Image 1 (tube, rainbow, N blue to C red):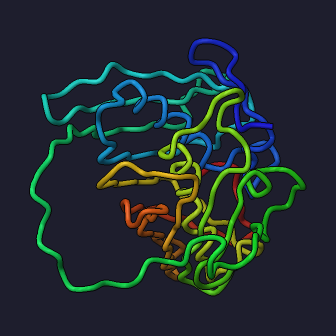
Image 2: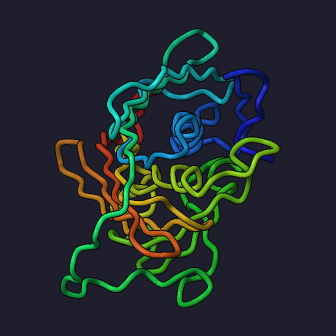
Image 3: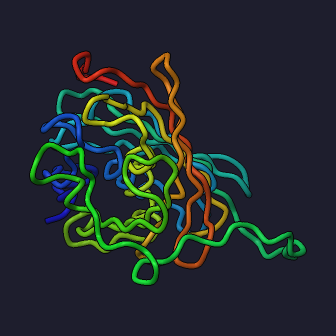
Length: 266
């Protein structure tokens, strides 16, 4: 199985591996983020993804999706790229706006004071494989991803969780380290929640990822934290690590609702 099967130029069939926690017919935000942003970045492989700003405009169906990629533009050092995912009805369900940065060698800054140690790597001090406890279907994103806690646990707030996909992003293709990172990073709230997702729906209408170098390897670590307020909003943020060290940051806005008041749109 894979998250997607390519059916033509810009057309991708979604599989049940993309299924999210709130509906049997809607996707988790990770796979479509990896698909859209990964395709935009692949058009300029010599540049670093400095920032990706994602907006989830509507629930993304488990259905054939069309990618619409605009031609990049900008200057010599900073290029801007935009794209969208369109569902079978012709509705834009997700957009991405990217900054693609030229890199060049510079003198590294002097060493600063020692910070927190990196989260333990999988297979060293990290826990055994775990799965998201709040998905309601036997197959979905939760079975397509491997998780190992370096610090913390589900339902106990801040945590450091290593993740990697168990399946290819697109059938017959090898995902890049960036695509693997993007597939995981929409899970920041999902691994650092304090409000039980089985009693409260939590939707993030956006996702921002900022990187300071190219990711490497199969694993990404979300050093995740969530803050929720009594007015039904929150923020989830994470420092992002790969097997070499820190690689960037992420930020999500959150909208919360009691389970009885769940709607079908974000």
